[in-house]
Image (cartoon, rainbow, N blue to C red; front, side, top):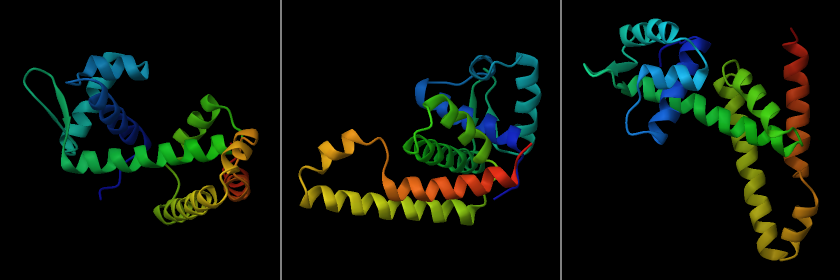
Length: 166
């Protein structure tokens, strides 16, 4: 996979998300979504086109190429998982989303896969517990976190943020 910068990844992710909401994506849609000037988006689209990560039709419709889609889906998956993980620690949705947006670009694939495996294993254990203990659902509603996930994320994010303080 080609190395991309954070800005390019954000544009690709935005195109992916917009393409799930709209029948076609145009530069003006991206500018509105990100709060950028259309001229800034045009420059970015030119760069993504040159890297063959997007295709632009004569009508101005923007489509992800296979390589652009692969990057966008990778970033989007990271964003979703990291946001949910932070919210499971009790972080409010807006802060979790903003923090996930920063972390998704710097976390290594190895670390992300380890977090994903851990969460998947924890979810499986919780689902097994739900099947054996019907009252687990009511207990979980009283507590806004999953202990094993929360302990894992608390340690992981404490280390991450101490290393990346601005």
